[in-house]
Amino acid sequence: MAKYGGLAKLYFEELNTEVSLGEKQVEGLVKVEYHIFEDNTFCTGAAFAPKEEGADEDDGWLITFVHNEYTNISQALIIEAKNFSGEPVAKITLPFRVPYGFHGAFMPMSLQNEITTIISIILAECRG
Image 1 (cartoon, rainbow, N blue to C red):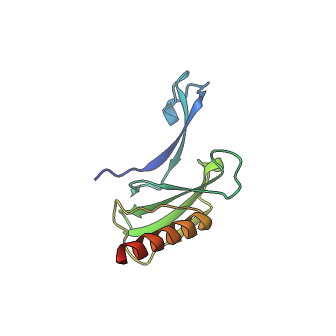
Image 2: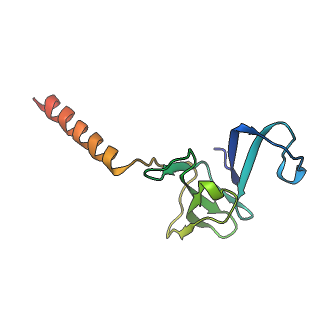
Image 3: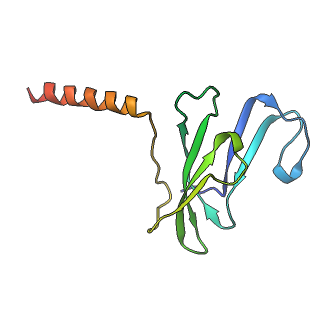
């Protein structure tokens, strides 16, 4: 399974205006912003949790599970999408190892309630 030492945020509507080999940016290509994890810390993906009533596409947070292979510590990181390369807004150390590939999805509570209602109706119809 692939594992990653950081995350990348792509700005498809913006071109990069600088040449910066340190961040692997090349002038004229799509702008990319990076969030790099601590040394020997990896994830296998992230989920986006939008802010309710968010106005911009990146109003929200990325949530990912990381594992440090030196210390054998797993954490949940919450990264503000508008401050992508900055420090996470939260680092939650977990009491157990989270395996690579573990992930989830996030949705507004109102949508979750609608889905629960729909599932209940479908199950009731199936039962007779």
